[in-house]
Amino acid sequence: MFMGDHPDLITFFAHNKNQLVQEWENAIMIYHGDPFKGNIRENGEALLDVILKMHTISKEELLTVIERIAIDISEQRVMADINIGDFVYNVNIGRTILYSYLSRTGLTWSELQKSINDINFCFDKFLYFAVSHFSEAKNKIIEEKTLFIDSTHQDRLTLLGQMTSSFIHEFRNPLTSVQGFIQLLKADYPNMRYLDIISSELDQLNFRISQFLLLSKKELIGKEKVYFKLNNLIDEVLNFLYPSILDGKVKILNHLNGDFTLNGYADEIRQVFINIIFNAIDVLNHHEAENPTIGIKSTLEDHSMIKISISNNGPVIPAELHKTIFEPFFTTKKLGTGLGLFVCKEIIEKHKGKLTCDSSDDITTFSIYLPVASRDDKQETQ
Image (cartoon, rainbow, N blue to C red; front, side, top):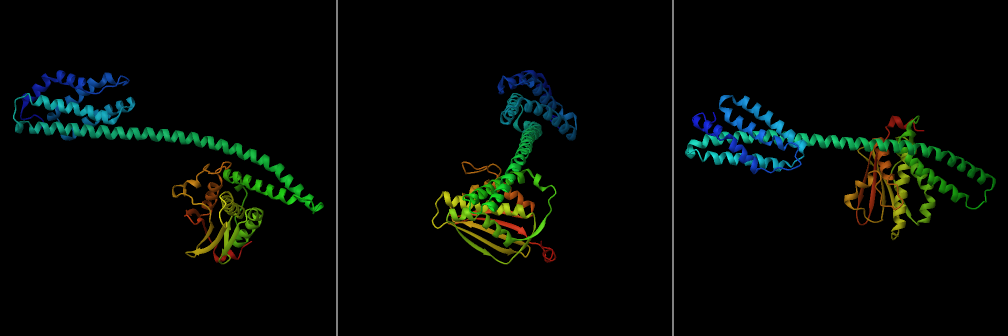
């Protein structure tokens, strides 16, 4: 055990203990704002006492004592919010001072070797326990702060969602009435100018409102999944967006293979197609692409998933944004909400599918993967 062969060493260090600790205290880095700077001398004495008494206890007991001291001191260092590097530096200063005192004993290197090994063992174990606990405590603090921030942010989002949903429902009621009166005017005055334009604009406004309602998820109450044909749904979307397609002089290349049946919320899937195609039209218009073109293609993958690709020949989307564009409130548009693609991704994932983006200099493609209804299901198609 430590100094067992040289009891005079123990007497030597015990006699010089106060001076040794004082030199250690004078040499370390101390911050004036440290609330535990008054404990520094006490901590140094505790570690030195362990080294001096290690020959009287077993290795297991020694490690237990060292770990307890290390945890107590590291707790102080965590609360003092100091740099862990400074702490390690201060501990090793004590090790160096111990070495310097060993050189004053007059013993040979071979006689001191075991004592040096024992000192290193105690200091290394102390640092291991202290730094490990320090890191765990710091990580716990970070996790708690992150959890608090996330919780606070989630509470605000929940409140915002409730306010938005309530407001939009109130807004949608008069909008529905206006749309009804437009239909009546069309019936009574079929040749009246601008009614089609007004109706189309109201549909677009209703579409934007539906995005917020889907985000609040309150529209799901009472809704049931239905079976529907993919091709019919896309035709409806293209008819709905026809004024925008015509206005932007966009060419639509429609290559739908087969007539697949899907099962889900048809109005939500329709919302996804409208949003992605309308975004493509908007991008092509704003960047004045040559021969603006949107391609729509469907293919069967693995006999269970249908892949619908919606491509445009607009500007490239940088690779680092391929995932960011699906995050809430991310938008490159001056008047955009940043909810469109986020809502689309939420809808597709809710239908057990996925939504991806791939972009190059020539073409940008949004790919939608959705499960195909089984053969038995197809017989029930509505």
